[in-house]
Amino acid sequence: MSGGPRVHADLVADLAYITLKTAGWLAGNLLGILGCAVAMFIVISHGRVDTFFLHVDNLASRYVAADLGRRELFEHQLVQVFVIVLGVTLAVRGPLFVKRLRRELREGKGA
Image 1 (spheres, one colour):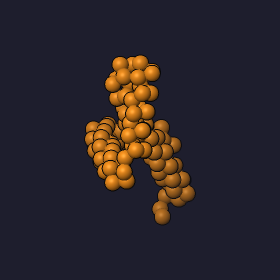
Image 2: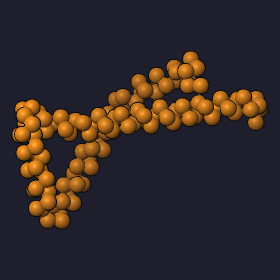
Image 3: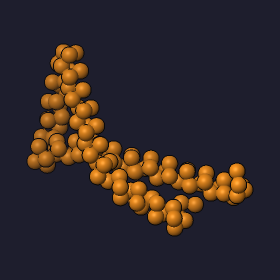
Image 4: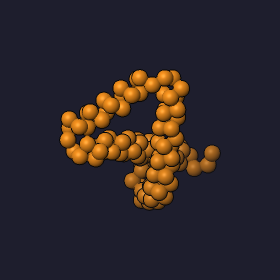
């Protein structure tokens, strides 16, 4: 490998920076999407705490009372919606993230 140990160290530092920034960005997006589910229940309950927990309790009790096939269908649909929302979110926010990450690496903020 040409360039010596300094180039290798810079490459490792950049890869570590990219990995950590991407993991943090993905975690933030995931938490934001999960927060949207909570926000949906808050909107449905008109911001009232007791109504919020009644809705959550209603969903939980219906889930527990459902047979295995209906639970499986619900879980499958929930995962599908989550994956679609995540995909759209990453597709919309991804280009800006990549642009910012490239700029930070070019300016030397990553090392």
